[in-house]
Image (cartoon, rainbow, N blue to C red; front, top):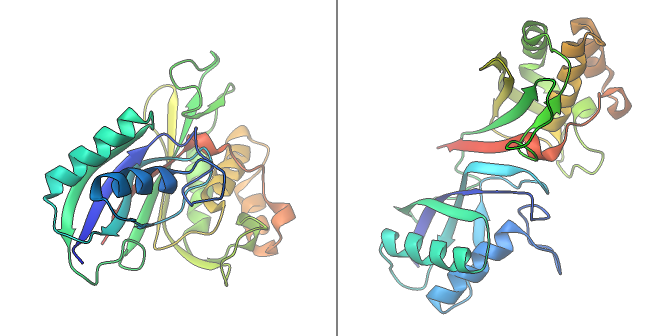
Length: 248
């Protein structure tokens, strides 16, 4: 069966996350329905990573097997047309033929996420449900300096959901940068081979405390070493998080 690699983006707000759930709208369900419709057989798609309800994607990667060969352009056009007709804010950006052993999840070497913070007094309009709004000024330098204490291999029990299904809380974080990219916008960039459930949103909410001056860098280090979920700062809202890209 021919295998294809697709890069997709989506607005996460209308969905209960990526993964199929009985009776609930999900991104996976919408894509599989569209692809099955044009392929005329049941299609199952596999993703590089699952996103939670409200989390967006700019560069999610999936793979799919069809019963016959299709031109990549045809797959992209047909899927996008059916998704648009059904009112889904999901778009296929690129389709490529893939080797039989390519796996969107297991072939990935790293995943990159961005968390957006709009830091201004005025409420959000265009960026409503597209970023976390913080009214008072944040110390971005302090946030970035503290974030470097999380880079590397650690037990991230403090920064993972109690519902996390990963067998181990140990992960290696390759990058966690905090930058002010404009007068009003801050972004947090996180890269790792794999993340725990709610890990990046837990980082974002905790680093906000550092930016507010409520936590010091040492407070964050102490929370990490405590390996205790109750020591985490507030988990940041899902709609500030974007799945940006996957490296293979």
